[in-house]
Length: 281
Image (cartoon, rainbow, N blue to C red; front, side, top):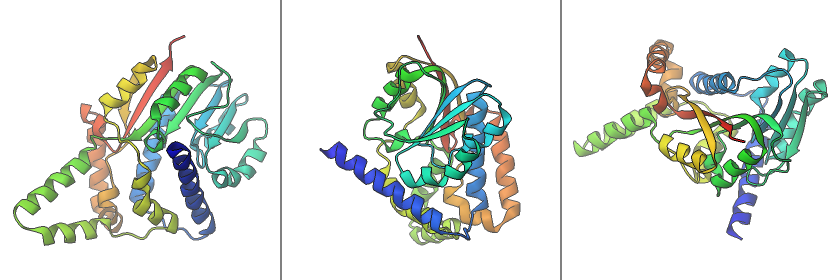
């Protein structure tokens, strides 16, 4: 019963987000947060390696980034699946313009309504951390996958969050609690849409599990999925978004630092884990 209640609450939560987002005609955007999400999408699509003729499933699609690739291919099928009907309804005009290439479906990631070994590509981006039973979603992906999948999820070993936490602990140790509050408020101070504010204030409640790389890879290995690539997204900007948005020069330095990290092993400790795997059949 608890799982059913949680599923209902999750659906309500994301319907609220979608409706709040849809109502805002003039949406204030954070440049740093947009950069963060754009880099995640770019890295995910790069690892997905979509080809003409692919049947693709985007699980928890929201306003699917995969819709943007449809014009590049003549023979492709994209299925966008989400728990929130409002998100899918907003995509209807785009899907109608790509009638032969895209379709929409409301479904639960933990119980996918598809046949076995059917999809060439699957994207599961920023979804499993919200599920009561993430292992069920992974087994379902294994069941319906015949090609490769890309999974992204918040990184339990997020480098920037760890550094910020260390500074906060040091300031508390030195009895400089006031400095922590001032630094935190200045870094986080930014204009957000109602939907974004709701996510920041309430979104963490709907994170059931934050994975480390080892935990995520262990989960995939249990489902007998072959892990081929583990990458990162970008350095976390959420704790610093207000500062980076107000000072473009600092943001440029931050992006330069991100580019350096991107070429090292530490890219695995960025804001989100980006992992590519395939099915062993």
